[in-house]
Amino acid sequence: RKEVEQDPGPFNVPEGATVAFNCTYSNSASQSFFWYRQDCRKEPKLLMSVYSSGNEDGRFTAQLNRASQYISLLIRDSKLSDSATYLCVVNGGGSYIPTFGRGTSLIVHP
Amino acid sequence: EAGVTQFPSHSVIEKGQTVTLRCDPISGHDNLYWYRRVMGKEIKFLLHFVKESKQDESGMPNNRFLAERTGGTYSTLKVQPAELEDSGVYFCASSQGLAGVEEQYFGPGTRLTVT
Image 1 (cartoon, each protein chain N blue to C red):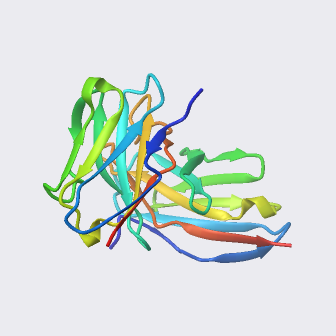
Image 2 (cartoon, rainbow over the protein chains, first blue to last red):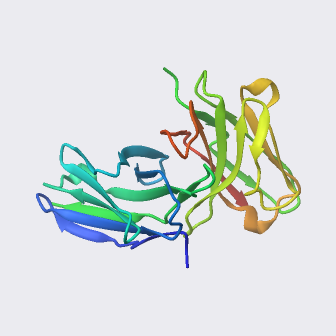
């Protein structure tokens, strides 16, 4: 089983739609969770950290479910500019080496 | 403020040759990380520097890879001799705190192709 798993997609949605991604992790001792966004042939950039209480930033909401060992990212009112790959990053629990998922591809069309 | 920079952006070399990648982190960031993404796979950790010291190099694939960070500023990653499976995108990232806890800032990557 991979340490961090994501559905690669692509998720193909119309503008204005709401879309949600999940990311599961295998190490129950993991402490820190992040969503990064990566545009085609660009470097990853932090989208948001994921806190135990969940957090929201505009149209984006991230949540953590420790019992089921997954984090989620919800995007409301999708924009064309949201098209990208969304990377789930988890620290390894017991170490501070970030572990990446393969990413979920989102395509928002007019 | 300047971001993380990497050089070169692309490199095409033949199997058996040597290549050296360079990373300049954000000024003041003690933590520097090297990652690699092979086509179709996830980004994988290679190693972590704190200032000039190697904190963790458990992700380095083998002894053909050598990383240095002299003076705790820029870092180099040398591959010698290169093999076909070394092809991929090599990212460098830096952070003030540990990347497992704080945001890390990525460079644009070096796309390495070994033929």
